[in-house]
Image 1 (cartoon, protein in one colour):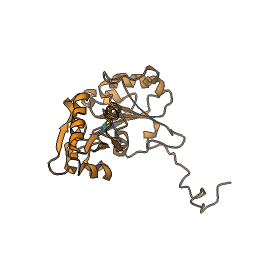
Image 2 (cartoon, protein in one colour):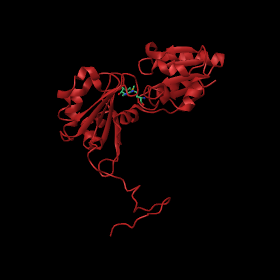
Image 3 (cartoon, rainbow, N blue to C red):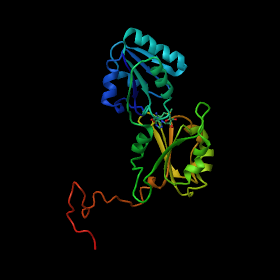
Image 4 (cartoon, rainbow, N blue to C red):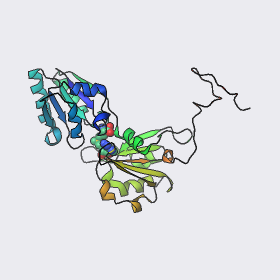
Length: 257
Ligand SMILES: C[S@@+](CC[C@H](N)C(=O)[O-])C[C@H]1O[C@@H](n2cnc3c(N)ncnc32)[C@H](O)[C@@H]1O
């Protein structure tokens, strides 16, 4: 018996990994948070699994299901949206499993900030623009952000920022970012990337709030910020330049004098 923490990806049923889908196709017990993992994902399940929506269960109640699965020698597929290592509340589950000496394994998934970049058809790292991606969020009741990671201090880097779990705080977020990012910095909102309801909005930091209805972006929204989102800025890596030689390819043109 084993518990598999599986990254279900951002939503679309075909964005789970082959490994994750294979485990789902044989697990007798499937646990998932119904608010974040789409029901379409359950199409990968075997016939008649026991399916538990964890949205209304506390940690002890979830652990009780793990114990029952252990008694029956059932493998458990525990689905988490995106990748389980990011805002997944998996640490406490894993600690509980270690205490109970239940074996577990983690199967990675496509994180939502990556799926959001795909929606925007953009590269989040561009030479000389930004080579750093900061993943962060605003504080929630369940998970406070340490004071030293406050948004204003992160904004000082002017790196590419991907802000999770903050749709309800957009005005405050924009205010904090404006201390360091210029008002014409490109920003984008992506909601429910890869779901049928997917939508996105691109704008500039200083005008975003006048262009959108913030209350319609409360849930399952990613805010991306930074000059890498500007598709008009020409910034190319030398990696594929014809006059650039590296370990695996010789230049076909001379380097400019
Ligand atoms: C509890 S966190 C889970 C993050 C997840 N583990 C991951 O790797 O993306 C939920 C937040 O992730 C973001 N999110 C999750 N799925 C998303 C999607 N399909 N589109 C946009 N943002 C998403 C939103 O910011 C949402 O509030």
